[in-house]
Image 1 (tube, one colour):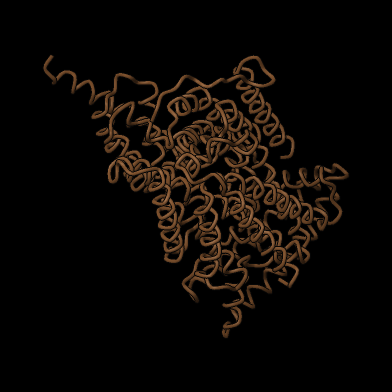
Image 2: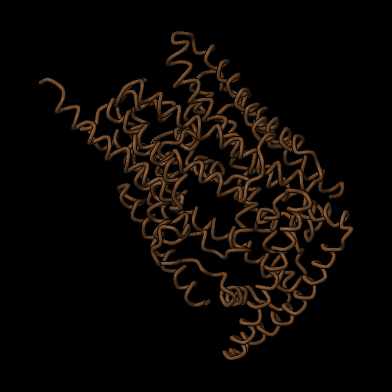
Length: 562
Length: 43
């Protein structure tokens, strides 16, 4: 990092905050503060939805996932476009017709207050926990990369978001997200281009061939296996239920499209999200593949978390780590020779040589993995910290290989992504706490001004909670998966409540209330006691709520005197 | 919470919203086919 990087980084962050604050006009009413006066055009709605979903972890962890595991993570998003269509037909017209501030408000008109409060409570648990991770994940990585204290990066993200979410509410969130997403995608593409141009002797088309030959282009797997986290069925079925819940029952997304200026604008925002999301994920994953290609010909670090590595290697009195590094360098040199030979064989279409070199590369990969695992075990022994560094692959590449100025831009990308997701989540937590809890059950008859002021305090309260959580949180194996698992524990139940409300008139409030509690207990049991892939929790929770709800309603109808 | 008449809701480009919905589904199918071909071709 040099002066130019700092100027770019703080210039971008400063402009975002100033822009958010400058756009804070007409947000002094509940309608203005919580749903931006319902005035956004569809493209702002679409970009806001995409920026909310794509947190900093998405941009840090996804390329690393492709680097280690290939492209198969893409299948996770196949259910999303179908979910967009279903929501445009069902939930969106209903929410707009009732002019609700939150999704849970609708549940009271369909069921009663206790179901609304239960759904709001589930949302506050899942989103309250997740907003902490949304701040924690990039704070941890940035603190490691920049060498700052964790609480400093946490405060920088948390406080900048707090400034414009408190002053401008939902409107500032949507408008800043539009530019944040543009910066994010621009920065990511630049990083991918630099990885590609520094990969010697390969055309863009050849990167596909090479990556495919070494098993990284595993985009679609049709084999059904409920324990396999990413295949087309878990994506289409599990992903569909997850995204129906996320976009239909999670206020952080519902709040985004409720800000659309009409039903048409809200629908178009969701439809374009359905059209663009999968290609966008493909691009992000492929950037990870380009970084992988780059490291086939350029020396990769033994451990991508350089700060952790430097800490152990400076205290390496026994020479274990130096020895591992020497072995790793030797294996890489052999691998680079094979990579060059493979490129040559692919060009000549020499199948025998392709097979030979691919086998050698795979054998060398096994050696590489063995050395890396030993290094991780040694790091754990020396520091107590885990050496799993998927989340550091991309950011370490940026810090090591990008020119100055672009390093600042890419760090601004990470901060922007963290800020955009956090802002939506704070706004959603505020709407739910204010509208579904505070206004509905605590202070019922105050004027509009009172609730706007209360919303601002509640925003500040949730922001402080998120920062405190981030500072206290411990390390996670892979952060993006943790966020998704936490979401999946509650989303299925929430979706079950909403689908019962939309489609199953037979189920009444008490039945759905009891079945939701039992359904949640079942999901938590499945998570704790089995190894079913987490994407299926949504389906399990949803099916449990609806199935048990029907049974309870049937029993209640039989027991009640006619 | 007030219930008001349904907003004016006319889809652009297509005559009905169904056009947009089919577009989304078709684009998804085309992508799945394309990604399957990429998976199989570059193996």
